[in-house]
Length: 251
Image 1 (cartoon, rainbow, N blue to C red):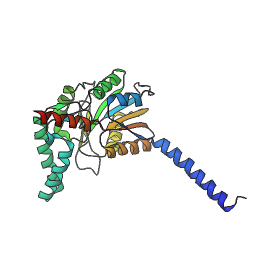
Image 2: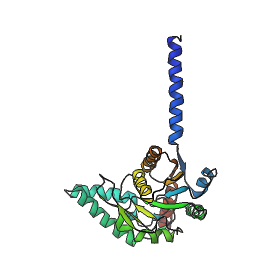
Image 3: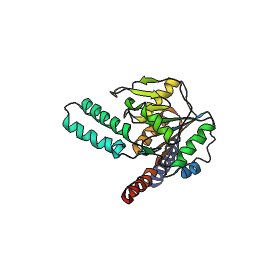
Image 4: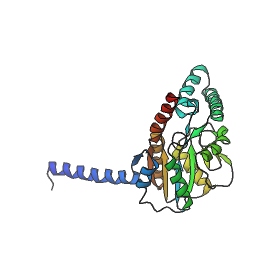
């Protein structure tokens, strides 16, 4: 028989082993600030047609020159519109209208050109690549043009446009021209909905996003569905934004 102290130590050991196994299953969220770092992090991955590479758009692969066409402005304006409108839906629709105007007028640049080159190279190896954005369907026409301007012209994952619904999320999700517009819905569950539509379960999902909570959402979904995931928090936009602001000051 074990003594009281030995039983306690044994329970601690079992807990650590179980926790470590669970942590390994869920994976870890990496942090990268450039395409070069991402290449190194993924150097052990065998890229083929069983892999899905998913990338966020705003502040990940492109950065708008107009501050009103950035994610931070959308959040601030939404808070203001909620204060002004009785209905949250009306507040969201008005914010989306203003955001659309800003997106229509802005020019963009790549956050990190090597990241976009890396995505294109991975795609050339037969990997399915798609954008997964919190943008909503009214930006379906502008977004592909913006992506093309920063060097991302990818073959279609699905050769059709369609809408999906993810209750209780109020707004429809739209897929068009290799971009899934989630309208602010849970990105992990949104991808799951799309994969069911595709009737496909990838061996591995690689996901890069500048927002940590979206990465957690993706890890949560993939672990639930038994899909290996490599998720990366991309921080490169901070350096690009600083350089952009420096150019403005020097004019």
